[in-house]
Length: 381
Image (tube, rainbow, N blue to C red; front, side, top):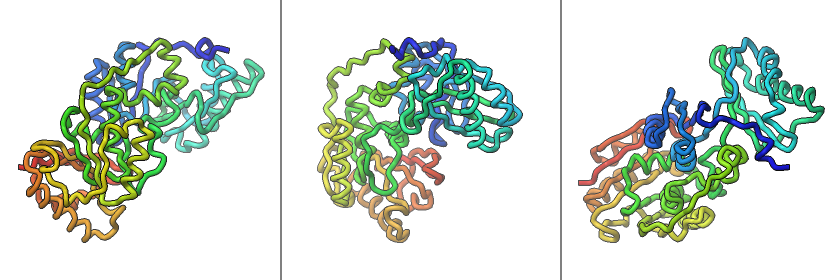
């Protein structure tokens, strides 16, 4: 059976889409959506709702750097309780959306009238199961690992939204980071930090404390995919392939000669970074080497460049006095050896930033897991 012919057809340009992001990145996401001529309907700390032309939506989905997940609204309704959700959901045409060979999963993020997320999830699943059993005398297929369709159940006060996710996995899970060191930066946060740094793709980029290599790899992916960083994940998505059955991407050879360097004092980190870069298909675009940040100098590179890094702030090094001393030494080395450079960091402990003894050019508050952190840029004069 041709799955493309059995999937429920949607009028793409009339759909309401939602892109979620890490807290603090919604302003970046708004700018990004507007760059692709999308209409932002509303926004909050967790993301944006938007609409747009089919070709603009396609380009945005392939290249959004800050979205954690993209979904579109399937149904919106008022409910009084989880049992009321069941009564209303069972009236919907699930048999058209979920053909026999299509597997599903539901994730719920509910509150207020649906205060128990798990119970609400079970009631929605029961409604879908009972409707299809009644209409077509068959059972639904559940796949908790890699479903064809991932339904998202969200609620606020008495309003419920049921959405379909564009992918079964979060967009930042690109698949190359099978192993990592402690406290790795999330891929979408790495892209946001690169954007914040104003790095120009054809100029020098250095991550002097690269850990498992995420920042350098994400920079190289921008080059390898011509900005279409979500391509590999989306081409595996059942929903994306059905919404855009005729899309094609021709990756032309980049004229840019990469100048991306990743250094770390830990040889295990460099070994891991190389493995991750190889899985991502970008090892040839990055020079990884075991070196101490404090031994680096601009004389080894060029007179100007961008440094982007995720320094330790209490996870990989637990002794705070040691971290304070490290930050001070980093600041001294930058002032002595990297005049003309831009130094950009993500930090989950804002109290440490003063130990660089550098004047911030700009900063942005963001969330790192449950920590309130910052992006900060310093110009080394």
